[in-house]
Image (cartoon, rainbow, N blue to C red; front, side, top):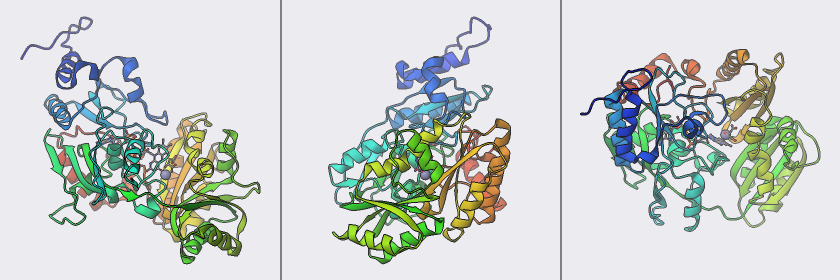
Length: 468
Ligand code: FAD
Ligand code: MLT
Ligand code: ZN
């Protein structure tokens, strides 16, 4: 092999340049970015809290190219940070900031193939870099769609959604991303391609490897292709937003629509502060009466679903005001879906995003305790979330850097006291590594670490994510 080229300034071997040349031989030199400006967008996360350092951003096209890139990095001891749409909210899609850990970002941006849809088995295989919006656009031609939906749909990729086991607004109806997964193709840390690819809903030959990779946050393998279920597009739906005086009323409404024979497609909660904030960014108010909380429900059912909804609302104590519209009611959904963007644009410091869940019976108490956590701090809390899943998004705005850790700790201790989870859907990433042990017992954590060590003994896949 030719000797490494020498860096003219330092006189030392220029390892990164020779590496980028070899990466270029695999993926094409135009798909290896080393210029700081070209790499910038891949090195800072969506919230702006985390910025990493990389010797290159590499954009392969095929699983074979990914395998060759991973194999080269394994030989050279270079860490790999897999990245899809970079919409993750916990800093997991960004390489370590410490430049002494040489790392590449492996972007799936060019891996956008979608296979023929299996309309009988209702499934499709897609490359990891396919966005949710692109998958839904293709599936809709067959009267189908993906069972998980996120406001980040235009950028979030299937590879990223599987790696984070994304939840989203349809979780109450169809489950999380892991539940949609039938098969997977992924490149292991040793560069070998693992492929389990059968569109069978029943297949019990040993461990659920696709399920294990779901939620692994890029720490166990690089996902290159996924085989997922599709669900029929929902027919007519009714969307309503009710202004309510207590979180328990939201839960009562979910029960009431079900008792009335309707199917809940989505159930989201917002607060007055959140609705005010998105209104400041040009989004309509759902109803004119102010209230402490607002619950948005989308329901499907018989043709008279709207009448059924009106009866339910009429009979439900604690409903202050309500608006009912035929689905998809994008303007009502915009009130909920604009929260993330409006919050990010309204904070003086990167927003502290904590994504927790508690058992439904504990939801009203936990919601009140979490809202009060910022009382003796100058930060502003905005809470919202997927109420039917017990999932509360705690967003803390204007948090001074020195308070991030203590506020995070207080939120997680409230959640733990209620028997909840410190990560309902966004994952651990870099943001919550210090608290992984709060969410899992010592033996459980040890089991996870054993899996990590078995699959990635050199610790080159997303170091610093999930484990310290
Ligand atoms: P990235 O951000 O690129 O990566 C996320 C993680 O997955 C990283 O750890 C990365 O290393 C890993 N990864 C990515 N691709 C691969 C791969 N091919 N192989 C292995 N590992 C990989 N999340 C929810 O769960 N529910 C929501 O409702 C929701 N709504 C959102 C709304 C907005 C406006 C935004 C900005 C984000 C939202 N998110 C939500 C978070 C985010 O969109 C999801 O976590 C999504 O699944 C990330 O996909 P991505 O392609 O952007 O992944
Ligand atoms: C959502 O439900 O909108 C997402 O999880 C994003 C967020 O928490 O901001
Ligand atoms: Zn969410």
